[in-house]
Image (cartoon, rainbow, N blue to C red; front, side, top):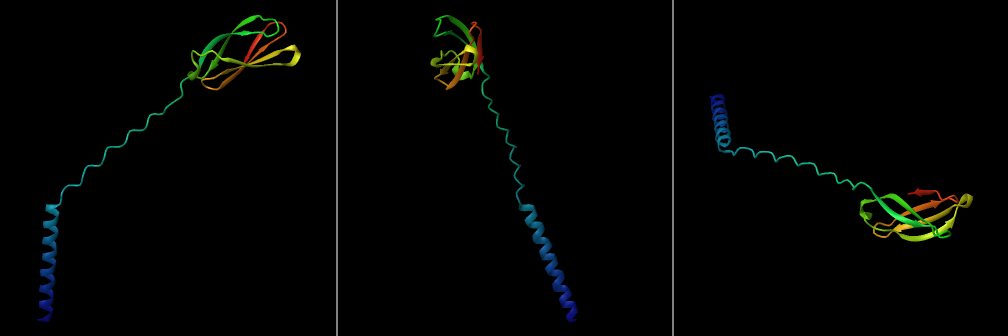
Length: 120
């Protein structure tokens, strides 16, 4: 008889647990939809270099030479400032010009025969 009471109590407890589980399952709200995936951040690439043309004056002969150099896009449309002239190998003159807006320096080499070489 004692076993019957324990068995009946266990069954009642099991039924109660099952009923409460069903009742709570019916009143639960549906799970919220997952947040949409974030879009990847666009990659910012620097602007491509641009060509800038200007005239270089040989400080010894006063001859003018047209020069075209590639510089960062920030320097587009700017005229560089003359910085320095020094002697190079085999009688060459090395002129240094600086673009103030972007800090870019360019060396222009003038050979003794008047050939112009651009060194970026």
